[in-house]
Image (cartoon, rainbow, N blue to C red; front, side):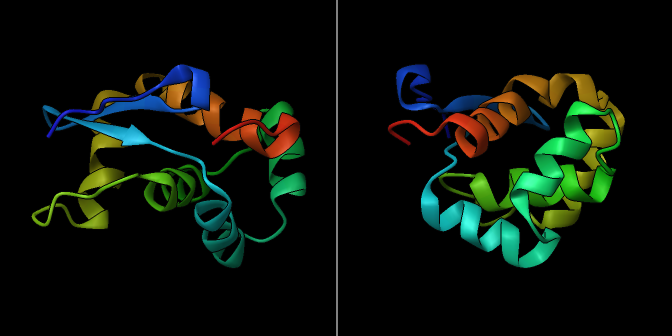
Length: 106
């Protein structure tokens, strides 16, 4: 699967175990993430203060994946975050936070 991420639409690519995925922070995806992690505005504020928890990052990324390979369990995403380092997910995380704070065409 290839990402096909379109930065002009607020999308970003995320590589998990050699698989390139498209992170698309759509309204539906953000509502699902908010249902799990609570207020997205509070989350964005914590992110700005460097207090974002690993579980929150995993939840945001998981809910904002445009498509998930059938063989990918959520635990694999969390494991990849640790193995690759959270820094590898920063472009995708920034795209999600930008959508939360500034909106756009996603």
